[in-house]
Length: 375
RNA sequence: UCCUCGAUAGCUCAAUGGUAGAGCACGCGGCUGUUAACCGCGGGGUUGUAGGUUCGAGCCCUACUCGGGGAG
Image (tube, rainbow, N blue to C red):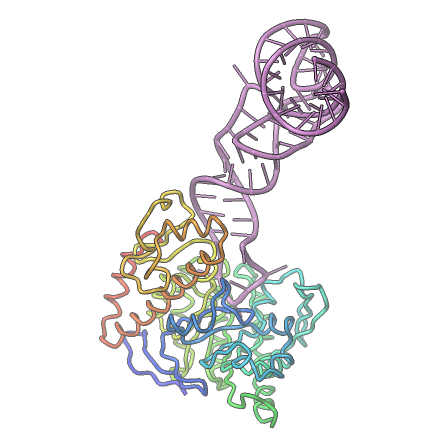
């Protein structure tokens, strides 16, 4: 159940109640594709940096270790020892990102495993079955994510197929939630809006899926090659046609600036690999913009990554030390950087919620963006 | 003392007598529902020294210097 607590323009603050606890929105979900936040980050660490939701991936966990293994171990929550909400992506994005290793048909998608090349079939029913076995809090509908440069005809056909897939997803999820041996019989299902950069296709699709009554609505297929302006425009055009009483999730986005712009346009959920991947690559988020700790100018810098930051890296360690760890390929270096970046994102979302509660989001956003000039 | 192998980028090494390269290191950049601790770009050289042969030498010849291995 989603409760909107307050609005400022289209930006809104809310609570999403699930069997694994309340999610305070706007929220940034921390990406742990293979049931782990890359960079040696434990679920205990996540509790320490106030992560609300962890995101994992249907396709990756199906390939390894196998969703049946995870079901046997009591589901993803028990398997990875995390009792707060988990959202599983459906494998739809892999249809896009593993291009070359797959073939799309009406019944579903044929993949070649990126691990061992073995042939895998995944359609709407398979994706729901796998996610039901994983027993995540929120399952995502199985969709196709067309390229931002795909032509209009392709996108239109693709979106229509995604709608048909959504109906199959919903039906299968209802069946699975009613089965006695299902671990999470309250598993939620989010729909995914597609349509590349064509507002009319986006709007038409938003209207159709809104009538299908899902637990939440995602906007997918953005930040895949189009400009930021195109992405913001699509959000402005599309979100008004999604149900007001359901959470809106902008998939795979993004930079701190993208998130601020998204919140302003009515987005409640975000996720992105940036804080984790950039952390592993030594790129750190600060309120003064992004810094690259590999740069020589930090070799003797005694300051923390960010002055006044309460994260596990900044509380004890200098830029110079963490740079050394990164250069020496010591695992601790990546770990500290990932923790800092996730803490930065989680903290920014708290600040956004606080600002919304005070009705000062617009001012907060302006201040934050001015600070991060070099992001 | 003799024999032998070697000496090329910061390091480890490539280069039928015909425009000296790679990996690592160093410097910088990119990454948006993770095939990504990844990918890309860049600066770097009197080829140990001195001669010789040749149209042309990192490469062939001579001497020397330094280093590895062996013999005595």
